[in-house]
Length: 365
Ligand SMILES: Cc1cc2nc3c(=O)[nH]c(=O)nc-3n(C[C@H](O)[C@H](O)[C@H](O)COP(=O)(O)OP(=O)(O)OC[C@H]3O[C@@H](n4cnc5c(N)ncnc54)[C@H](O)[C@@H]3O)c2cc1C
Image 1: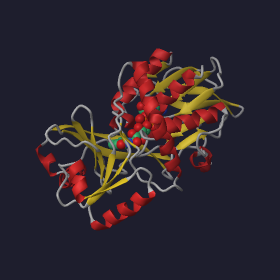
Image 2: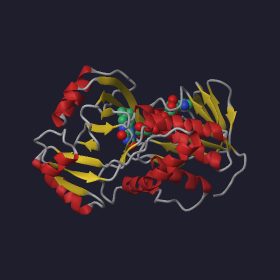
Image 3: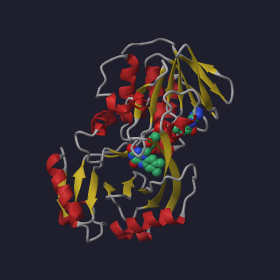
Image 4: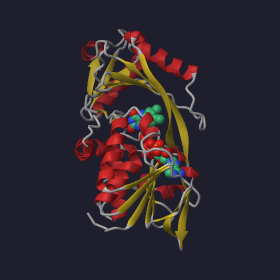
């Protein structure tokens, strides 16, 4: 690792992407300031369900390599953040089951099982053994490695870790524009005093397109998700369960069951709607009928940072010293350690751990 002592770096945004990249820059010896317009870890990274490594993807999809790398990195990453902060982010590999709800979906899963590593096809009886609470008419499923992290605990743990490491964190500080000179970053202007830096990481999530002077302007828009949690102590689901077209079911260590989520183009409207929650509840109870007796603990919404082509923007922008780490959309917890490792290799000028081209922000120049 090349150590660049005391160069000033600014990270814009305190979601998982900003927090984890601030941590890595600090480890490299940068003097790091993280700015958040509100509170760190309270936007998409708080709203998320925290599913890791569940989706079946084909090898030609660039996200496949990013997810595979991230799955390798997750255990050590979670353990390090736990140790540094004293707070367990509750990363748990309980396995994910992709459920079939029709015979056609079952055929598809059977074919996918032959191609995927470490996937186990489950017929109806085996499925019931793994998850007795599932509806009787589900024809089968595919069990794949994976699990979840408690994303809210992860954000808090990362925040504690980087504060202890000496990252300066300014909350309620909104970055308005990038400062440049001769095509190079010199800092940012904010709603308070301007700040100088040689390196700026844009990790502002769904708000990434709102900062002046950023080139290329990241084509990232908010995608709203409505999501809720039940007390499932009387149901006892053990795996992350996924259904085609959602909902998904995420059992937490504390007995909560997170069920999500809608995918809506609704601008910045954060409201919970009767239609959105009814859609989730009805579909969820069709898959796990006994959920109908579970107390509702919480309902909330969040904005996923959705990019134009569905792939994240990771790497150097069109201004020297400016890097992007944004646009992760519906999957921005699972690929966290891999995305940060790729970005750091690009900043360090070392061999990237995966091919970076598909994620290059300059594809939008
Ligand atoms: C309902 C829902 C469920 C999800 N479930 C999953 C899942 O199961 N698995 C998964 O992998 N992913 C999931 N995701 C996606 C994942 O949560 C996101 O992709 C990820 O959290 C994005 O992280 P981020 O750091 O880029 O953005 P955010 O967490 O949104 O953080 C951006 C931060 O930037 C700050 N900011 C914005 N503008 C400025 C500015 N101008 N100046 C200073 N600060 C600024 C904001 O205040 C915010 O704190 C889900 C998302 C949602 C909404």
